[in-house]
Image 1: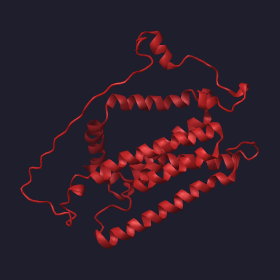
Image 2: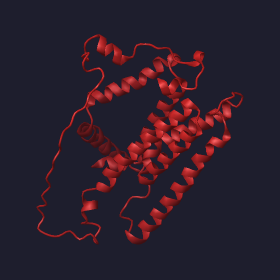
Image 3: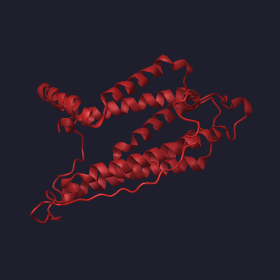
Image 4: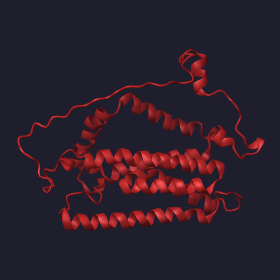
Length: 261
């Protein structure tokens, strides 16, 4: 609350009300001696044994362990998501405190995230849509956030990432014979039978392997509740959630063919 209220006039501050966490403490779901948190120290060890009877040749891209185990996709995805979350934190901090330094720091982390994995920029594009909306339809409002100059970091990030992925595409075409995907695999390029088979695999096999079906339905119900309580919500956060949901749907449609594993 301190970060939200800092620099705000008294009449613009949010009221001091009981949070969901406070209710958990009140009703005994969280004990009083646990409500302030704590620390835990643990040691984690692991052991890996390679049972192959030959030495993998790194110069052969098809047997190199880094591609064989697909670590380039999963490990970098976690790092990119973490950087995107850090960027979102600094973006909200800049929005709340009206400080440009946090704004530029946010886009620095968005740039790092995008250089690692392009799909991590979903929040970046959601912020861009909202920023453009504010500049076009809220021109008369006097606000630090309503300035055309704030589009500059979006442009800088887009140019750098475009240059990087243009080089990656060039390198891939000249050295890896197109081994790494540099395009899209959209749903509309497939016939109905293949599309149906991939959807069945995605819905019946892939999703249950990674996520709880109950949790997915709860998340969907939470998302739909945004429309029920629309009048009580912060409109900025509502449209941010809506854009992120549409972005996730768009991502699935653009890369639908990869869900056949």
